[in-house]
Length: 459
Image (cartoon, rainbow, N blue to C red):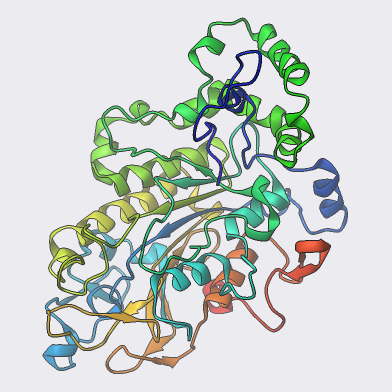
């Protein structure tokens, strides 16, 4: 992932620092070769006119318990059903946890997939990989995040990035492996724009979108001359691979920095205080509000990480003892935080007539053990869990699949991360038979042969 600032300054012989021109040029994710794009359009792989659907992916880092959220088992023994009670929703026959009263009033806007599972190791990192790319990383291959694939195939729309990730990338979750939030083998050009800031901070701003102070003091015509000065000054650097990437993306990076529309999209202060309160004055709530603003401004894909780590922070990871979270946090903090933000996002998108062309996906990397552990929590359980999908043409107010009597395994319609990815790709209008260019120009299928989307979601 690329920031618009370098990690540290590197001074050249004339006093110009490498960091200075990275501020203006940026090794960003905004590049898309026109030859590639036009070629894909000619092949029918990209047709913005027919299906221009956007996506907001909410990554519920930590792995929500299916039994304490959206697939409750009130008739199971106490050590299975847990401490919470189900409540009715505005859709007959669908019940969810009492911790989500606003979601209960919006059940007609989303679908529940209650039979998601995978067979890989029960660690956070592998789950993050599979849910965001559709595949487990093996053989040294890192597969691209779905939003990065969209960025490559369709490129940015106007002055804003094609794919934004916020507020921070997923950090340490115990496995020391990639989390599937980059462009992988597609190359760094298509990495997401990373916010790296907390939208709930009273002093929130996105410095990466703004030129350095000395640059903003110059006239616009001198800014372009500055690029020519860099060409002359750092010719040796520009023979490197990074510099070629800089040259290919300079115009779009410049456009992003100099665009008033792009900057305004990130200005949460323009939102009424009542709207900010509605989403929740916390990092996740304000990130969801910002996601809506970015979709309005033309961003195609937004990834929101609800948490950055599972250590020493209250998250969905309810092992029950430190450094993890107690099960009570679903009632006291995490549940209300998600309930307000997710519900407000769906309502807001619908009110603004954006829900029909904006898919909202909320998912964790696995579920939790059916039986409560001795610490009063639940441990990792990739054998079965629930995710949420709505908008973008998905039929809300339904449940797809079912788990067994203890929420431990799919009973009906087992669904894999690959099928989740295929469903998102189909919703975005990307043909599943498409092949992507891997290392050495070796074609890699978008999804493996035989993988089908969840068709019930559209019927």
